[in-house]
Image 1 (cartoon, rainbow, N blue to C red):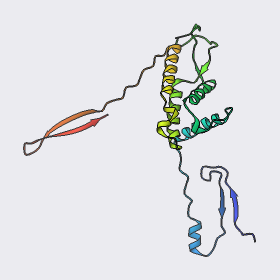
Image 2 (image 1 turned 180 degrees about the vertical axis):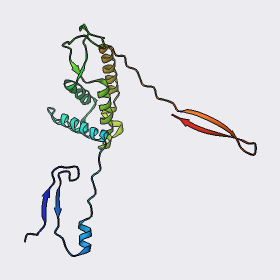
Image 3 (image 1 turned 135 degrees about the vertical axis):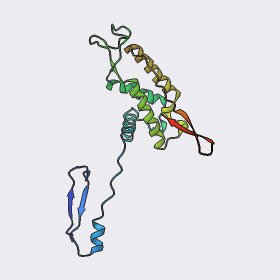
Image 4 (image 1 turned 90 degrees about the horizontal axis):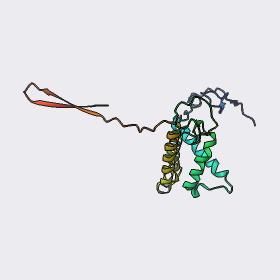
Length: 201
C-alpha cells in the first residue's frame, strides 16, 4: 500500500545540495510534528586546502590505475611519484626557456618562442606537500611514504634551480619573522619594580 509521502528532488542549491528530501503529511500528533520538522545536520564544509588535497589524491590514484599494468597503491614508490610529476608537465603553464633559446635567463622576454610549458616549481612543491599528508591520512605508514623520499626533494630542488636560471628569476627563500620581545618596567606604589613582557609579531 502506497503512503501519502511526497518525494521531491532538490535543484542543487546550497541548501538542498541536490539531495532527495521526503516531506511527510501533517499529523495532529505534536510529538510526530516536532520530530519531522527537526532540521537535518548540514554536511561539514571542507576547506579549500582539504578539497584540493582530496582532488590531488584522487588524481594520483587514477594515474596509478591507468598504468599498464596498473600499480596498486601499497606498491607505489618514489619512481612512480617522479613519473607522475613529469606527466603533469604537459599541463603546465610556465614557460621554461631551453639553453639554446635567445631568451634564456631573461625574466621579461620581448617576444614568443617555441620553448615548452612546464609545471611551476612552486606548484609541484605544494602538490607534494598535499600528497604526502594524504598518503598518511589514507592509512600509509610514515616511514614508507614515497612522497617524503629524498629523491623527491632532490628532483624538486633541480626543477627549482633549472627554472630560476631559465627564467632569470632567482629563488629567494622567505625568512620567517621572529617575534620581538619587549620588556616594560613599571614602579609600584610600594617602590617595587615589576616587568611586563610583551610579544610583538
